[in-house]
Length: 192
Image (tube, rainbow, N blue to C red):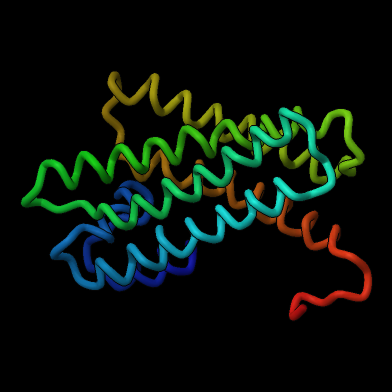
């Protein structure tokens, strides 16, 4: 997502890297909008759902763990749908669908790391990923909560909220991905 964002944002004259929403790069009628939607929303959405499924089948099944894993799967599906329903200046419905899919993704992704942290409490998950899950989860919820609470009062740009939120989740995905890779049976490579 980050490479897709920087590649497109830096090539778009006048696009502010800190304040403009990611979705502006995927708005119908803008250069490379469909390619950006595919690379920023759809591919990461599928990969997010795959991570959620990997967590679901990981050997740490409890009810809370499963709920957190399914929340990651759902966040991935909604992220994918965010790319399918691109913003369209000529359609109120497309903009509404895009925004709804994106907000649902944010809501699910902000809660899921903490649910997984709580679900791993009685499990054999090593302390290192659990600490990062807690930090990323608290950060994501705090950023999401502040964004929802403060936005009506301050009317700050969406991009200002999206960057730290996405960064917190990037930390979570890296820690989780490394942990999942460490779970694979010995003797298997990533090519298997």
